[in-house]
Image 1 (tube, rainbow, N blue to C red):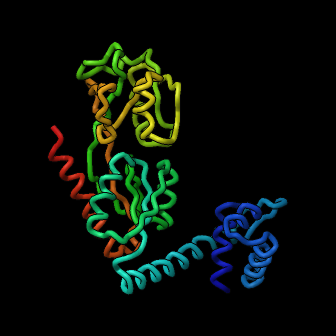
Image 2: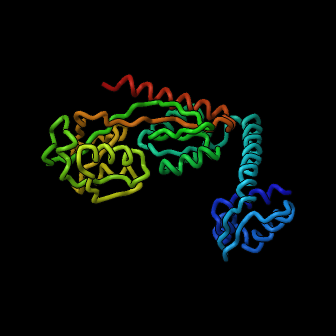
Image 3: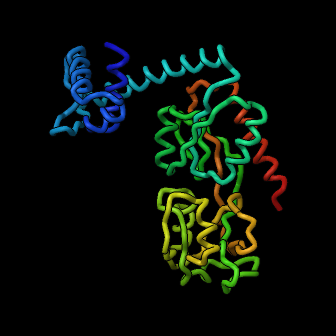
Length: 295
């Protein structure tokens, strides 16, 4: 059994499509198929049910997948540990986030300590981030809501109030707070379902008798304030994403604990490099300062 066979198997098992797997691995379909076939011959059983170019894990494949993931995970942790010992001043931190508004300042602070460390950052839905965390494919996740699991360490770093952003000239502009029932007939701009703020806010609005009417749904939370300023709609915006624009007013929500938990997350068995440990300290210190500054 070869390491290459396991790597190819994992890719095919996750994508369940020969063409897509071959494209992801940058190999020909015939080479990929032959490698998987040799693995099945080594094991003495088929691992997939085949329907054209679509593949679906059978019972043998499902059992073998967890073992293969664990084996490659441990080898990757060994590679990371050796790399950390041989070159601690360099390397790449892999981050996955659902809450990205505060990330630039965090990275700026970390860069002062480790100027040669590179970053690979993915903006994901909660479900996508959870999948990468459970596989141990990222150093840290910064997410709201937190991701739970026996293999996941979860550190709540900040309790973040959700505000209502309205444009200058809006009927609510100038007020300090608003009740949810007053927003019943408003047009909203927001993120798609699957992102933390949206999944938190919608059910709470339903408890007071309405579903927000979204005229825009996107996957870039940072764009919402520009859309509010353009008077496309109003938005639910975490306090950490508040933009100090003169054209936007931010109102607190009355009578509801509308707030999100921001968590720093990591896989318990993933090797944590010295740079990653320092990054965790920077994140913790950043949110501690933010909490102290909050009213």
